[in-house]
Image (cartoon, rainbow over all chains, first blue to last red; front, top):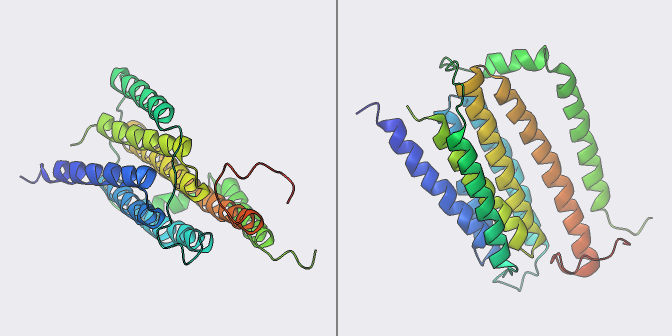
Length: 168
Length: 101
């Protein structure tokens, strides 16, 4: 029975992830879409745990759920009039959009099932934080520093963009 | 043991749903949410390949950089949406047809 547990977790959270993603892209209520996005992000974190990426699962919960989703909820609340309780959101081009995305999905699935993936080595289980930290400090130290500068620029740019235009 | 293909197909489905949302939504914040779905599906692929194909943490480092850039993108895009709302009193992408603020 113990070998069956990851399978059950995989399928339960795959259904949860795709079902909540359908609500995100097709729900009529903007706030409900934002909270469905929460379920999607958590399911992706569970998938990271299943794949043995413990540090990334923690980062997913901290950054996506704690940061990006909060930011999106602020955006939802600030760009809709408060008295407009429904926060309705319109869709258009539903049939062409569905056709294009279905075609992309069929194409990707065909490629995935027909490619003979070279499954060389399974990563050994255990904490990955030390290994990720070591490669960030040695091999990927330049992208790491560039990412820090990028975060600073994004911070300044976002603050500049939302500033009141009175003193310009 | 769950095979690699199952992870890839779930990520492909998530990508297609995000693409569908990007193509059909009028609200700018909804389009941003769909872009986040696409980021997540790409990250899922990176982590799955890192476990099954290369067998080291290389893909996880890449996924970490993707998360950092997604955070930057969300902050700047929401700032743009916010100033768009201040000018147009609306976040519908149909209304955003001028470059001049």
